[in-house]
Image (cartoon, rainbow, N blue to C red):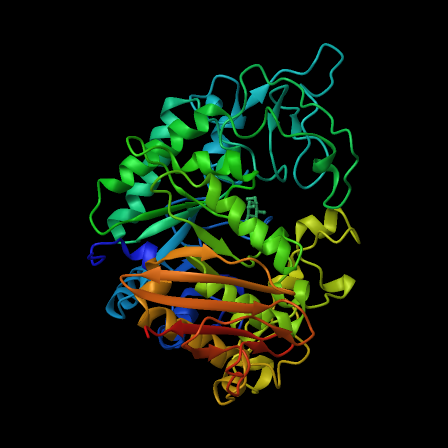
Length: 528
Ligand code: GLC
């Protein structure tokens, strides 16, 4: 069977760059596009296939770029349109792809559209946002809670109505039921596709349209406070409406009008059975919905086994899987499972069936960085101090070498670096056989060398004493992955004629299937 015609995003590995924290070239302590350009050879050498850049558009930075003031330009802190054109060309010259972050649910309140919309009730753009009268008693139109806490409704005294914001009040929700707004946003996709970007990660896609009539959300019976007030209610009417599927199908259709297998990856936090509906159908395809299962799973062989099986069981025919260990919103993998298991997690991510996305810094084992109260930047933390919702710890600057500020900037970094940056940085790890970076390079090279890892079927094996195991099979090749998710040695009954290809630990693994504490191994099963 030939797999040569598979789209790049099925075989490739995506790498998320958080541009503010990648590489500064101007000395303002904030990363920029020329900085990303300067580090492209690193990414190529690492072995990834595509970069996704978190938002780089003009923004007041109330939510660090997820409050977009102009969808078709570049924030001067990051550079210029010429810089992004140079970056697109340089990425393509190296045989890689570039994805941008499309934020369709809301704009900044400083976007020209919103300024017009709020200027008067009969402005032509009034209906581009979601405005609602007060209740007779002056109260908010319904009980919806913003994901950053407090009511989702903000009173506008000048025009005497409330507007809706799922996130900060500086991020008013756009009204996708308005055909002109919808057309204008589709034009934004065209603007960037025409410039050559290879696709988009789509921010909070399941939020994009709200139930007509704005009914109250039901309250949750169990009072989950883990991530703040929004978890007090079920987001039944403000998210995941049927119309969201029409919109994502329309985006997909637009993308399909371009050559080169452009990809749309949806950020959607929903249970699997609802999540996979965003694949659409073969007749009406939608997006590749991010699978965040590994971010939330309990770290045990049994639980990860169950997660993989559950996801596999709900994937629709032709629905290509994907896996993620972390992103700019969630605690890092090294923080969640510890440094030793983070190596096992890397092997899992890069050998599972489906497109992996690697979060910048995870390839050198960056920890969550403790942020002193006077350095907190994230609005989520500023509004809910001490609740553990802050995202600054996972957005710390990338340490490149042992020079001042890890080579990230000549100025003062916008967030503190990882305290161990003099020893945990790219230059140091590049020279170490046993480093996390070397492991990532080896895993990425192995994945590239074996189409079986990219495209093969997956067959889960029963868990044996804390060891998660699965086979990947393609065209007569069988690879076996055994992952010891415990800090104790473990034994896995290997099939005969298994030969180790790679261990997560630097020296050679045992040949009898015994795994050291925190060890994962990829084996090839030789035909006897
Ligand atoms: C997404 C982003 C997050 C942002 C939010 C609002 O969840 O990943 O960083 O705060 O959307 O745009």
